[in-house]
Image (cartoon, rainbow, N blue to C red):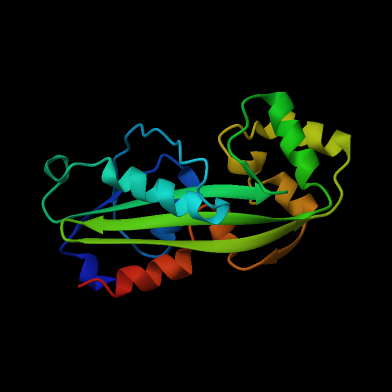
Length: 195
């Protein structure tokens, strides 16, 4: 196992996202899942690129030391989509999802994932930015995707690993896995250096 240094930790992934779970498994981490409901608000003056790391740290701080297993390590993450100087969170409904995808169509936007790794005596927060370009999507394609894939749990109303990514994304600059919700290379490097 490459990440032998993690054997002394009980690693907790605080995320319900099946994509994050799959990506963390993919880099060879054994973990359990423990989630908390966290208020995902942030200060209105916070620069847009700092929102995702701010929220990942907020999620990590929601765990009191005494609620976590001995030798715990908690990993939290938050992903935001930034387009036209607006943060596109999870869509409220079908119309909102349609609006977001219409906004992304034919343009390049940023996807920022903030990650926090926390133990009893160590906290590290970082973020990774990827740029995603969509070709022009017509209304029929957007409606088909929203009605069949119901992307209401996804920032920006899309999952790059789904149909819309296959037919709509023309270019990704930076980490593809970051767009899925976890910057695996950067996280692996952080975990590898924990003693």
